[in-house]
Amino acid sequence: QVQLVESGGGLVQTGGSLRLSCAASGRTISDYTMGWFRQAPGNKRDFVAAISWRGGSTNYADSVKGRFTISRDNVQNTVYLQMNSLNPEETAVYYCAADRSVMPGTVSSTWDYWGRGTQVTVSP
Image (cartoon, rainbow, N blue to C red):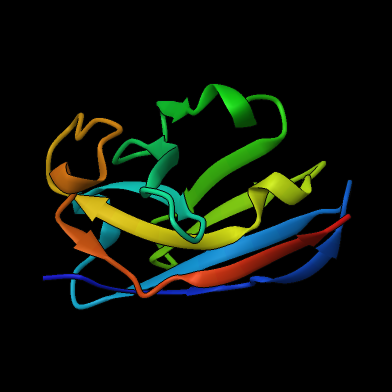
């Protein structure tokens, strides 16, 4: 079983950038597809991005394509989410997730493991 801890959230102005990190322990993340989701108050948990076991394949929600970049360092057992050109509608708790399947999909209920999240707030 893998444990995930997110960091890097905070307050940023519209148009700003943040880099989120997800540190894993318990198992090597090279065994998992890794992903990021976000959840605003009153909303469901939405898919943001995912990256394959070795990082050769990525998938993004349409709303973040060209602005967000997911990456992984299997040696450091860490996954990153670089977020640029943020807007207030992206204020949410951002969650790191891991799944043992090759293509876990974009629905949060299909993913196996979750971190506790990190708050991202984008001010107008």
